[in-house]
Image (cartoon, rainbow, N blue to C red; front, side, top):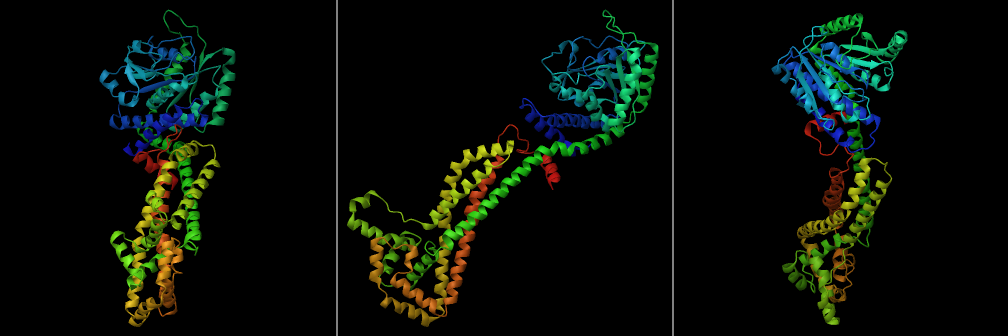
Length: 589
């Protein structure tokens, strides 16, 4: 058996961890855990069969409480090795009794039984369920099977059975022959038939012993069992041996079965022993895994589906955010100021009288003359009118784009928070809602900080647009000289007054006399179409820049990362191992 099935053990640990924290796990969850435990043990059995195909014959007796498993173990080996108790659920450990094998042969079984560890019979403790017994015994002369390792397994229907199901599954998986032992009172119990249906796909040689039968009930019980077996299972009916109720000799811890039953048992065991096919064990184990794979992966697929739904909610919110950015900023003439800043930069390149000296000095201080342009007049005005207040505060020009981007953040977060409240009460969504509330202040803080940084990163595009316009003007000297001549008629004093009053925003800059003259001449010239092209390209670059570096690069990244930080105790699919992730991807795709 290759290591391609390592994901089974990984998945088992996840199921066990989740169910271990639930007070009342569902029947479906318990079934998934039981079958995973059996599959994991079967893979160990396959490795044992491949590395040591002639290892000791394993016979496992399974059954509900008070069915007589321990008594039958003693009968099979003609020994008093198996302890017997009148208390229901007395057997809580797997206990193996080996007849005819060396200690070296028994040690080969240790990897098969992990994570259980081997102890002596007198060291067993009811409170410690992670141990098992495997000891050599001397079979009596009336032993019915020899050599063999006979396993007395934990009761699978007691109140505490879920605590040691792993021991039951390990015992079933190691078995070459399974003997189901039931009493006349419990042969119809659901858990008995659940066990039969569980092991049916393994095609292990099976013997059914119906114990504690009164003579007058034997025919009725056997018929009822046969009918139910044929109704519920597809495999052929296994041999069924009725065992009468026999009062045990309490001093010898043994029972004396009639010779007819002993002979039937011995003959059945001989036949079943000859049916053992360890090569087939490997094939049936793989088929068992494939049969249950979908059920095991279901919780992970459900979480993956929820994560996909969350990403779709994010994508929809970002689409709305992009539309909002276009509507409230790019397509709003009263707020869109980026191209006006490019024209302001063009003014500096044209050296418009009246503002060139101030802009020239500003270029040594800051990167962007247009932004500095907005502050020069306001600073001068504040210094003259309110010198005390000017020193007490720093005036920061209000950015229309920054305000729009902050409103987009508010709208997006509120929208997603509302969407989370509408999701079903699944652990994934509960954990995500909690993570969202915890992380929201940090998301907001990073977004706003990056918003300013991203807008600054775009400023070279503004300058580049101005330079492209200027390069086109240089190719047309007549138009360039006309624009430079326009500065003589431009009301530079009006620009200075507007700047000093602090009322000139980038959106208003185009209305300033100097800017108006240049803009009018450009629009009406042969470069009018090129001017529109530059404006359109600048707007499109800004749209993509904000989308890539802020909406996708920050907001989507932060929101999408929430799913990798979930800590809910009932989640299965967090931080998957590579092998398990590969299997999950195959199942999803």
